Length: 101
Ligand SMILES: [Zn+2]
Image 1 (cartoon, rainbow, N blue to C red):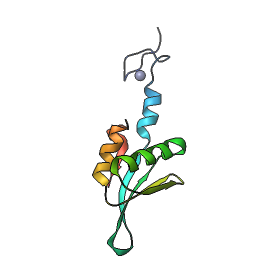
Image 2 (image 1 turned 90 degrees about the vertical axis):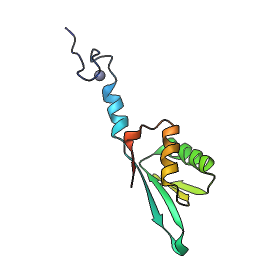
Image 3 (image 1 turned 120 degrees about the vertical axis):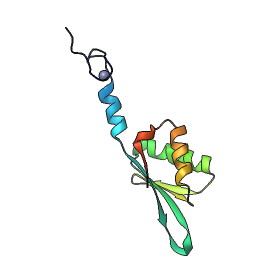
Image 4 (image 1 turned 180 degrees about the vertical axis):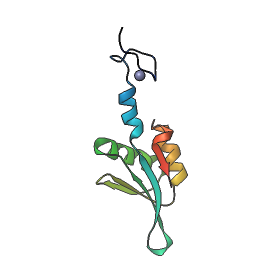
């Protein structure tokens, strides 16, 4: 008898729960940072590499704002917390991996 995954009910060798868990365990954090002159930045952390750049580009496009991405951090000009979450969901990031604080 092959070992059955308790989560999805498929045999362990074809189940992808471990991979999905890894994806889900990635935490994307979204928070506001107050800058000089009462201006806000929306900061997104938890993404790396290609994903960081692509996501930054897409967020800037969707939110029509300026921003930068480097060292695993996306900074967007303006206060966009909730819209960033919506945009991330639209890009396919699972809701449970996004922490808005
Ligand atoms: Zn499974």
